[in-house]
Length: 397
Image 1 (cartoon, rainbow, N blue to C red):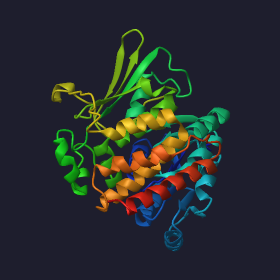
Image 2 (image 1 turned 180 degrees about the vertical axis):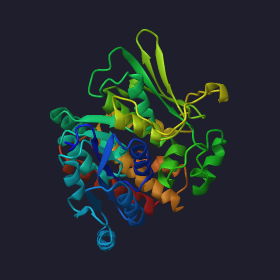
Image 3 (image 1 turned 120 degrees about the vertical axis):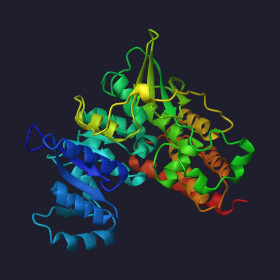
Image 4 (image 1 turned 90 degrees about the vertical axis):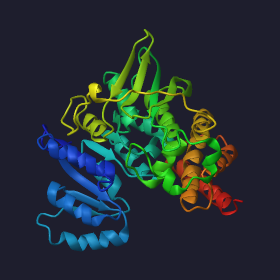
């Protein structure tokens, strides 16, 4: 584990993305608590170089081969430069290091799955910012964590809020006295758009989120509420709940992130500014509290808090995700893969907004309910779903 028993060694996979940058910001505010052991990036080597100079990690991984070659040259000018590990195996190697206690798993998509599973196998604190780890391989990840005593700490603001409302119970423990949990959703940019106008919305309109500054793909997922469907799938795995025990409420202000309803009638809610540094600081310091840099929320300064039941006709992707969770892991893999292809096609104006649901529903309906036993099974189902979705959008009329 970490060389200094009072210091937590951290590997940040995806350090140049928004979650990675926020993680480093929290670490910089708590320099005596953490040591950055390893960083990784795909192509953003200029920012990575700045991070290396500031945080002085022992290891770095650049997963794009051409960028890695350039970065290797740049490291020659850095005193006490870190060891650059190979793109092929480097991510798995760094999460297994004895000096690493906690792994921030913030690589987007299936590319982050092998290293996340490796971190769980190695018994680390796994800070889960990678949705695909659970949506694609939740059963495998939970089994690996149970066998190695790894701790899974969610970074999604909603799941982290649930964990905080559970009084820091481990996600592997039974949810004692819990009737159900509620995840909130902003409702995205089309919450009040007339339904007949949805077919003509543009990618630019879909990416204009009212509360969060996010990438284009996740912004579209927020508009369709597919992101909330994926979060329901994650919550079922993380907290051992059925889809019927995970509710969704639209909350446009994005100040209440989740609620936990108990059998005695109590409802505990987590409130805070919509800033990812809050869940990151909670997971890094768990079970203690550390400085996040985010100001406390003043309810006296808040406008009225609104809550609505989601409209199934406006947000059919949410219902589709719930049905996929009930159907099993193969269906959730197909759901995630087809959604990525459909959203990409929409962003290229190859299909219209409402076709996203139609494409994903078609692919999920075709998927067989097979047992997922290995990571190879995961990628096999994922590849097949992507291939079929690509064929579908190519011939879409």
